[in-house]
Image 1 (cartoon, one colour):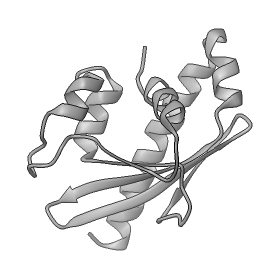
Image 2 (cartoon, rainbow, N blue to C red; image 1 turned 180 degrees about the vertical axis):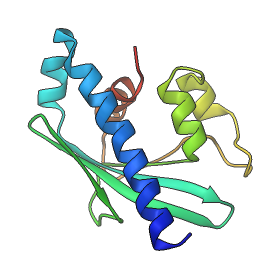
Image 3 (tube, rainbow, N blue to C red; image 1 turned 45 degrees about the horizontal axis):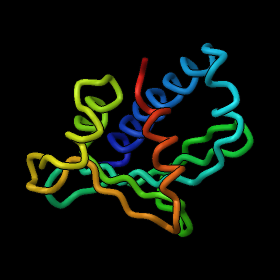
Image 4 (cartoon, rainbow, N blue to C red; image 1 turned 90 degrees about the horizontal axis):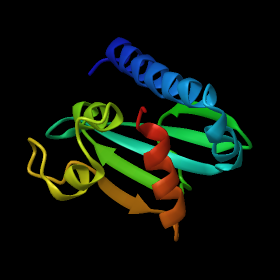
Length: 132
């Protein structure tokens, strides 16, 4: 993947995450959750068998910012193919499907690596990513 493709891919992924957060902000019941969620989440997106694209989401005090590249210290790392993550966000795949079933590369659809004890953050993030 060349630099122009990486930039387009990142901008597309960033716009998806931004639109999900914007949609959640329109619902008053999500305001408190969005404002109180503080985490650094690294996304490890599998492009093909040997290629990954790394970006991270920094959520702090109601501000959400996507950045390119890896981050050294994170609360959670989510590894998935972009297609699986998209199907999870639009409710085609359930949380159980993402955790239990395998993707086209023979790995679990959603792999979770913790940077600490962050089960609550994982549950909150999974609710934030799924569109209602």
